[in-house]
Length: 617
Image (cartoon, rainbow, N blue to C red; front, side, top):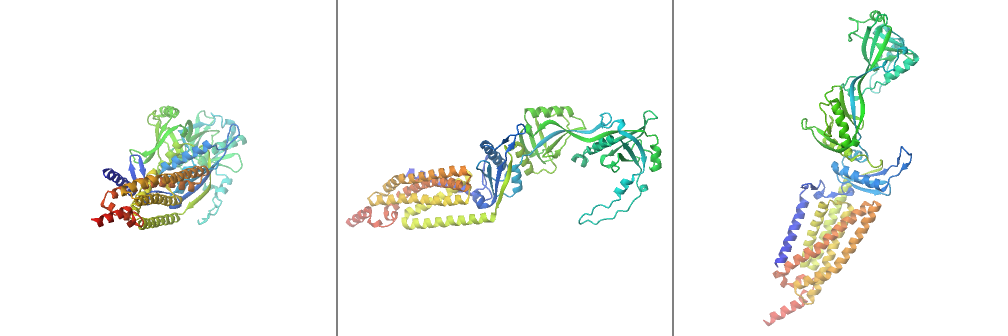
């Protein structure tokens, strides 16, 4: 009796813990975490809670050195599965179901996904991180560098704005839909301020046009973080040595070429330069100022120049998101490898304290930050931040950076959304089907087998709790086919109880005591239960293997769920049912053997013997 009581207490504790695991959501024990927003915290598959079904195809890669085409290998596909699974799992998007289809296709199922675009970006792209040395206010003397030599300039003078440019400014702009067009009032030459006209040789004009085209405005210049790129003119009088007539700076786009001629027009300085004339500037003043001008030289002023110094995302060993200790904004912490630590340390040592040198950090050609280096950083760590960074974005970027490039490029070839309403309807119908099935099984077992039927019903309830708790703790993704397998495993559990109870009935009719009948019934039914369940498990293994090879996730989910259900049904039938029956056999209920057999309880030898003894007494 004591042994049976201990077993019963163990069963009660096990079922109670399983029920607690089901009801507590989410479960967090150290680094172990289970549960979600679905029913009882179970992982529901695509067909039960909706989501996205994506199919990618790995693309062949052409070797730039040999020109040979490299097709994706099995190792490449395995690497894709591992990398994508790590990215999605760590991003908090959910647990993906990823399968290789054939030789070069990849199935990615994302149950319950809400942000599909984020998921597709996270799966198919790799963040490209670049570090550049930004130099500010870089001056290049075009004559000293041989770009514009003295012979390239024929003459320099002041004059009115050429008619070709006046006609250009007087043109009515093209109409814009939805915007009221304002007519342009024609203006004459005297309505425009005087200009400086530089005449080039044909070769000089071509070279100077290339100089203007090279003046590109970066994001930092447009935002006013660094000075704009520009051209500095220095106009001198050759008759008077070292006599500078004018020196001023203009922004590149302001300079205009006169039609198809070799002349370029520069705005005349309006008192904003040390060498500009005082007072208002008119044509006469400009011509008088430029009367002695004979030569002009140019200096290209680059507001900022970004140079590679060998450091990139390939030098990262770790990237992880966190919050800035000062501003509490999301940032990404970076740790470099040995080569990256050396490159970063050398540059920061060189430019530390320089206001004209910075380190610009770009992510996918988007500038994130370009800080001034105040001190050398030789520890091999850095941070990147953006004004618009969110915690979610820093997590995704960190995963893309740390994960590195995909082994082979992939292309999305199929995309299908499963409506969450359809999934909820399937789940509701599955739950109803399971409850109706259990109720019918309980009714049959109780009406036919009586007390053993009640015991089987209690064991089946414990079985259902244990199965659902196992699904949750093991992280099984429950699909519609998995629900069908779970319901089928209920039948397996009932079948084991039926075999046991039938053997018990035979033993009781052979004159055995209740305790002896229970033990013999279980022992003699065990070989049949074992063989049937083992054959089912072997079938599950075969289904799982071939479904894994063919990428048939529905069959694979069915096999896994059925295998777990069969294993727990064996425990339920052999251990739980037997424990409860043994406890009942030690109570006063054991004197009423008729309630332990389906029918004919009064014909049992034990019952007849008891009746005869009662008559004699």
